[in-house]
Image (tube, rainbow, N blue to C red; front, side):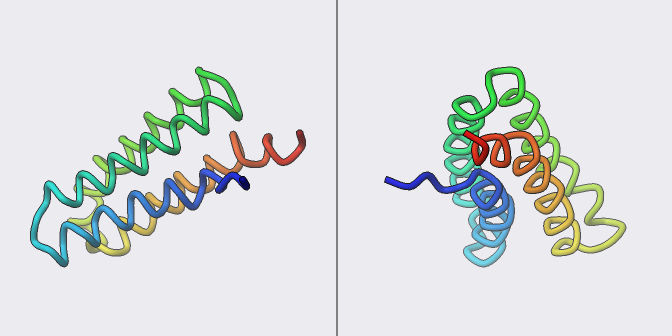
Length: 103
């Protein structure tokens, strides 16, 4: 079975979590989407790049989620979410997905 790269999983978790919370008006449901994608990505990060990198990427994922809130006050909600999701996705590709392709 082919492995889905972690970058799109992380991006989908951040964007999908926000979209779910916004459109359903149920923040906990958005948290479930965010959490499930984060757990799936973290497991794959650990397999592809090791525990330290997985911890760093998990911190970036959670930091992106938390950081999007104050950023949204400056640039708007969607630009903030897309910006942090893009940053986490790029980091995920560079530190885990690209490394997995070489194997």
